[in-house]
Length: 113
Length: 113
Image (cartoon, rainbow over all chains, first blue to last red; front, side, top):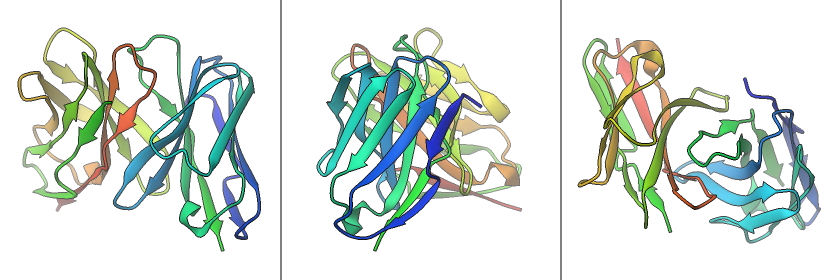
């Protein structure tokens, strides 16, 4: 498996609280992605990064922010969690070559109550 | 913007029969195409990719996929299904020159003993 670690693996939080999910890689890959997986929707891209401090929005970015201050870490923050953000969140990485596949972490199951 | 369609939510195949999981895509330029598999409570695993060249791509676990530019399709195939192939399958596309990797909604494959 590619060196990707997501933390925490499970989290229950209350509506309105801030939440930060962390993705850590040991591969020195350029690209990092955050997706959410929901039944009937598949995987949807939230935000992605193409380098340190270089990020951009994906398909479903509202309510989420990201930061990448180091190559190895990509943080996803829910500023004020809502029940609609209950989901499984996956981080993925790929290297600088555009034709390479992405490798996925094991996921974080987030429940907002 | 690129997009991926997996028209079947579920595919049922008898063990030993050939299987096909369908995928069509839309990009403004030339595509990189990927197939992933997800087993219960796991992250996504890469199966195969089309970059350029031969339209028939071979991947892991005996899977293959056929790229058809005129039909903008990239169907996943296997000559003889195994019960252990039962899983959730995702097609993904990356437009050359774009950083985003976009996934379909997934197709659940059931292989019946």
